[in-house]
Image 1 (cartoon, rainbow, N blue to C red):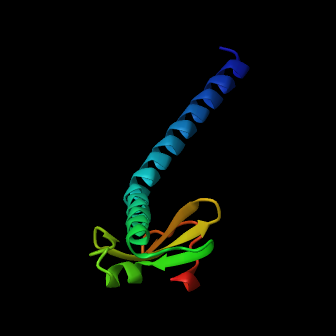
Image 2 (cartoon, rainbow, N blue to C red):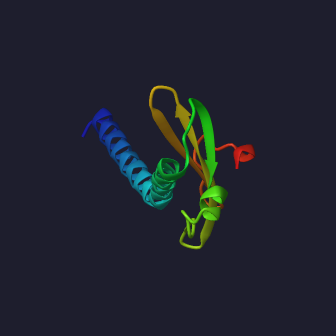
Length: 118
């Protein structure tokens, strides 16, 4: 076999192994964050229910914290496994209400989470 062919095969095997390793690592990461993303969705849906039943929002920005949802008995617990979490939802209301949930736990934090808001 000529030298260039061997080098090409080795590079091909190296690239395939790197693709495999990166794919496996990303699947593991996605599996780890999935419960936290579900928690974000629970926070948003619970906040929507709370707002519909209790608040008459004016246009602009409103922040609903998990503490408020606990106080009003809309949340009983807010954790993933034994990882207790806190969070808030930012509601931007111009023409329609846009809900964005943010969660902070010891093992996870939503991108864009601002500590001073919770």
